Image (cartoon, rainbow, N blue to C red; front, side, top):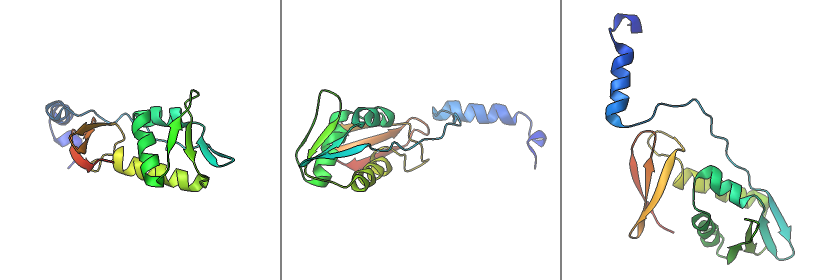
Amino acid sequence: MSRQSLPGYEKLVERAFEKLGGKRGSGEVFEMPHADVLVIGSKTVVQNFRQIASVLNRDEELLKRYFMKELNVPGSINEAGQLELKGKFNPQAINQLLVRFVERYVKCSTCGSVHTRLTKKGKVFVLRCDACGAETTLPAF
């Protein structure tokens, strides 16, 4: 059955999106940020940390806590917006952690969109998708 055989097809689709409160896809393709990692002495520095947090639409402190917990090391964000972690870590390991963070705490498990918001409610995180409206409860870290 073609679209032309359904009267008002486009209007029905538009109405469905309005009722759901979702946004239509913009056709944008998400480009996964790549961590620019430098090992200096006994510490590892993610030079573009601030930009990564901005692209992912996540708080820098939250992303810092994730890396610190997963690597089990102390760390801080310096005045240049770089993440400094105690210890030497392979750049591939840092980027793999970043991919895991995006898969779990950025991408919507329902529609795959990265247009999401993460809020903390008590001891859990709630991932709310701006595209489809789905809410997913995730363990806090």
